[in-house]
Length: 218
Ligand SMILES: C[S@@+](CC[C@H](N)C(=O)[O-])C[C@H]1O[C@@H](n2cnc3c(N)ncnc32)[C@H](O)[C@@H]1O
Image (cartoon, rainbow, N blue to C red):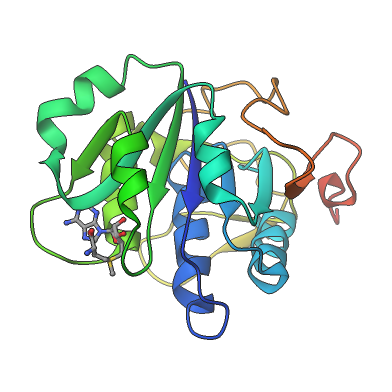
C-alpha cells in the first residue's frame, strides 16, 4: 500500500504551524508522501529538516499549485477527509485493500469538486474538529496502529524510550538493544516517483540514497 497526503487550501500567512503539523503527522503516522498546496517553501523546509535529523520516513515532500489537476491525475484511490462523509469504520476495511491512496485534508471550506472527485468522503466523527486529528485517526485506523513502530532510515538522532526523562542518542550509538521496540518499516523504499503527476506542476524534493541527509554524525 502506498499512501500520500495532499494538504489543500493552505494559507501561508496563517496556516504555517498547523500545516507543518499535518506534514509531521503524515510522516509519523505512515504516509509515504506529503504534498502541499499551494506551495510554501518554509513549511516544506521544516519537514525536510525533521527528516534530516530524525531519519527518513517520507519518500517525497512536494508541493503543487494545481491541486485539482493533481487529484484528477492521481492513478489510485482518492480519500477526502470531511465531517460530512461516511463514518470511517464503515469504509476503512475496503480502503485498506487499495494499492495507492491519496488522502486529502482541507483548511477552510473545501470546494465541492473535491467531494465529487473523491472515491471516499470519510468522516472521523460527524463533528468539526481539526485536519491534524482527522489525519492521525484515519492513518491509525488504516494501519491498525503498526505505523507507530516503523523505524526511520538514516538521520542523526534516535530516541531511546524511557520511563522518565529524555534519552536521545546519535544514530549508530543505539547499542545492541537500543531504539524503540517494535517492528521495522514494513514498506519498501522503492517506487520513488509513483504518485507524482504533472511533474511540471509539482515542485518537490525526492530523496535518494545519496542525499546529504543520509549521512550520520557518528
Ligand atoms: C477546519 S476543518 C474544516 C471543516 C470542514 N467544514 C469539513 O468539511 O470538514 C479543516 C479540515 O479538517 C478536516 N476535518 C475536520 N473535521 C473533520 C471530521 N469530523 N472528519 C474528517 N475530517 C475532518 C477536513 O479535512 C477539513 O477540510
